[in-house]
Length: 182
Image 1 (spheres, rainbow, N blue to C red):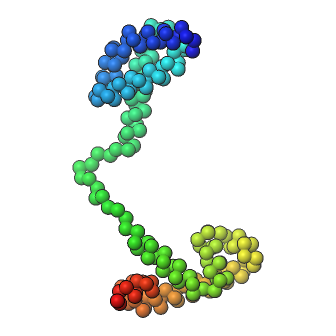
Image 2 (tube, rainbow, N blue to C red):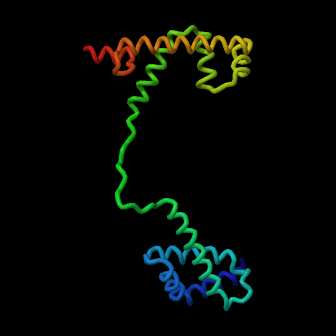
Image 3 (spheres, rainbow, N blue to C red):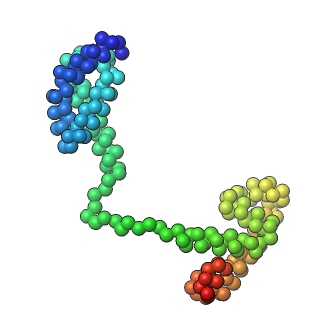
């Protein structure tokens, strides 16, 4: 934009800013939001100022920009805010159970042979296919399948025996059982 065009835009804004602010106030109820709306529309119009051939239509152009901007804002806010009669309960997820499950899983994995543990970790945690696991461990796909089958059976057996030790109250790790009996 040339220097003369900048002065022309600044002159336009100085002479029309009160009328434009009134237009913005009709579009949004909050005076601060109206000022923000006008500022945003002025910035957008400034970049297009030289494209407005008939400057007498600048007010109409700017009002259209304000309407479009207000619509964008409304759509963005509408996705964020949902009015309700009752506020939802502010609950924070307790990750204690998740940590206990992870500790139990890590403890139970120790009963597996290293080869079985590797197969279980690659297939279930890393979510590798049978073929990818076989390639990573240097074994055949059939060996991966049979090893996984035996490892999962061993894990189920270990979990059942730990369940039987703790009773119907659930599965506890060694440390948790010690704390409960102390």
